[in-house]
Length: 156
Image (cartoon, rainbow, N blue to C red; front, side):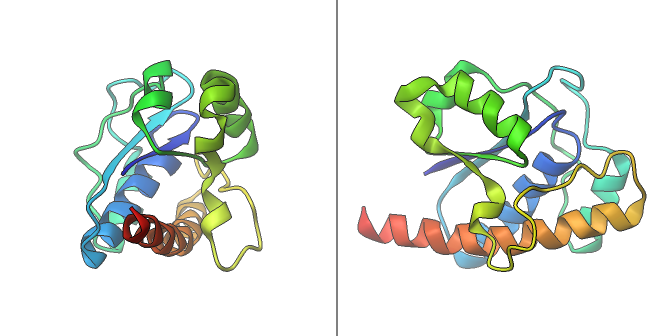
């Protein structure tokens, strides 16, 4: 199973989601391929934001080796699930996916068990507390996504 996490710039939310879910998948022994991308090309080749790296490291997740990239049409075919961090990126991904791949595109927080919010807010313009809040949301959704993946893998 291949999963892609997507935000706008691929330097905050989606690399944090990739790292958090990778840690959860390893913990559970799930065999999945995990990647992240952005809908924009603003940060292609750049590492995650230093605040994102610091927040992730604070929970034992290393995302320092990740580099920003832009989502492509190929990603729509190559991935089984394409998870947007917010509705704007969800709409962009649905247009890119077209009707043949639209069922793969969802909001990441659809998998969260404590759904107070349905979008992962962009912490870029805030401080450390925004990144900590995003990590809380991502960790909750990662557990729910891991449950979903376990169920799909058992059925296949």
